[in-house]
Length: 184
Image 1 (tube, rainbow, N blue to C red):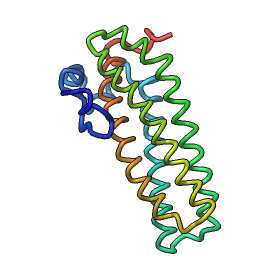
Image 2 (cartoon, rainbow, N blue to C red):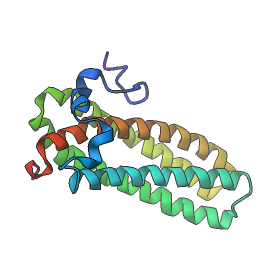
Image 3 (cartoon, rainbow, N blue to C red):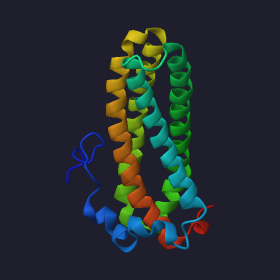
């Protein structure tokens, strides 16, 4: 698979070679694994929070578009949830790029290409987060822009979920295999 096809906007999954540990540590068994508690559980919880925030933002936008949510309620929720999502994702990616990815890739050098792909995703996500923030700010200034924001959010959600799934399928098996105590 070429690097262009592995770009976040085109990718449907990581190549099988980068998902090799997933066969040994399938998603269905993660919560029962002895190395799940602690870092893996916390990290997956962060991913769940991102999914819940984007879900709430989408639900709110649709409710506001259908006049089922008062705009005086919608705008502060958008500011709080949208701002929180952007801030938390930037912080999460920063920690991964500078702390977890270098250490985890050192534990499993055969997966380096996967970590490089995830790092590229984070750079792509910077642009997506900027577009997301601009669209949200457009709504805060003019509520007739809710439809534009919702469309941006749908695109954003799709790519965020692709990234989160791929990140989980690469990283969780590495931590389950090696334990989180190898990270410092």
